[in-house]
Length: 227
Image (cartoon, rainbow, N blue to C red; front, side, top):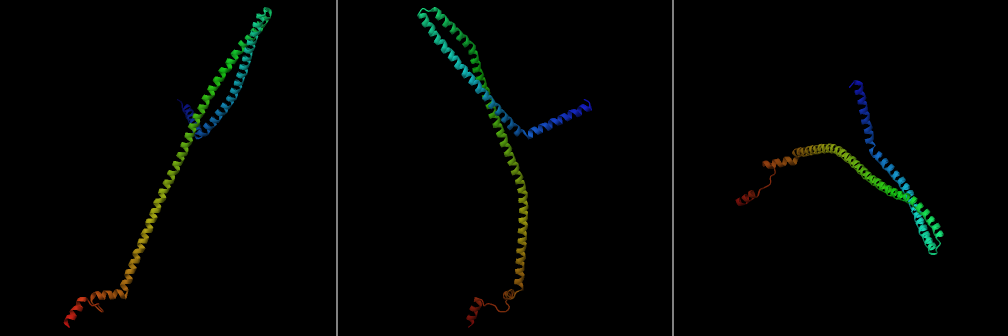
C-alpha cells in the first residue's frame, strides 16, 4: 500500500471515529427523535387504517344490499312462475343475474379490504410493540446515565471530603497540641509561683522542724507523763 493510500485510509478511519463519537454523544437525543418519528408514522398508519376499514364497511353494506335484492327478486321470480308467467319470471331472472355479476365483482374487493385491514393491524401492533421496547431501552439508558452521574458526583465529593477531613484533623491536632502546651506552661507558672511564696517557705520550714511546729499527740502525751 502506498503512503498516499495509507494517509487516505487513516483520514477515513479518523472521520468514522469522529462520526461515531458524535452519534454516541447524541445517542439519547437521536433515539428520542426516532421514537417520535415512529409514533408519527403509526398515527398516519392508523388514519390510513380507518379509511380502509370505512371502505370495507361500505363495501360490506353494498354486498349485503345486493344479496337482499337477489333474495327479493328470487321471490318475485317464484311468484311469477306460480302464476305461470314465465316471461316475467325470465325477466326477473335476468335482473338477478345482473345482481349476481355485480356481487362477483364486489366480493374480491371486499375480501381485499379485509386482508388489508388485518395486515395493517398486525403491522401497527408490531410497530407499537417495537416502540415500547425502544422506550424501555431509552428509559434504562437515561436512568443508568443519571445514576452514573450521581455516582461520579458522590465519588468526587467523597474524595474532596476526605482531603478536607484530613486537613481538618491535622488542624484539630495542632490546636490540641497548642492547648496542651499552654496547659503545661500554666501549670509550670503555678508551680513557680507557689515555690516563691511565703506559704511554700513555711511549709518547707515546717517539714524541716524549724519555726512554729504543730505539737504531735505523742509529744503531748510524753509531756503529761513527766508532770
